[in-house]
Length: 221
Image (cartoon, rainbow, N blue to C red; front, side, top):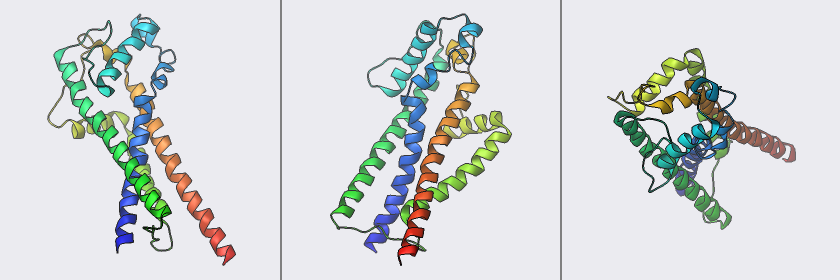
């Protein structure tokens, strides 16, 4: 019974790790944004320089991801409503980081206990825990991706309605919150693609590894 509970905890931690790691990619790999400034035509559409746009983005990300930074958008204008939205985002960013750290620590602890032979990761229906940690969220992700692909705008609105219930401060006025001009919807779509690709890569890798491992065991039996 103990090993079954540990295995379930491991599965949940692995799913959380894959998800939060993938979400963290566009957040902490800032060059992902820098590489899009020119292709998205942001300097042409705003008449701001690359450095002005980069500084504005860095100021926002510093506030969202690092302690002790006040909210700024470089030389760009912002309103109190816009600032309050990023304050709402900050706790979500912190939550994602906490979940990433906690899930990583849980996985390391269980794997260490497994190596010391204190616990065993059991199989369910002849499949190991990695398989279920991958196949279940992958199916859910494919369904969500199909829905989002049909109407990204609607999905974008639903996403904000769920994360920020009862608030509309995420709807920016480009005249008072100029940061939205350099963070267009296409950028957020590209972030979603990166997150989905990373998550799917994790899942497919674990599924393929389990199938190969199972075939080897059958051949050696």
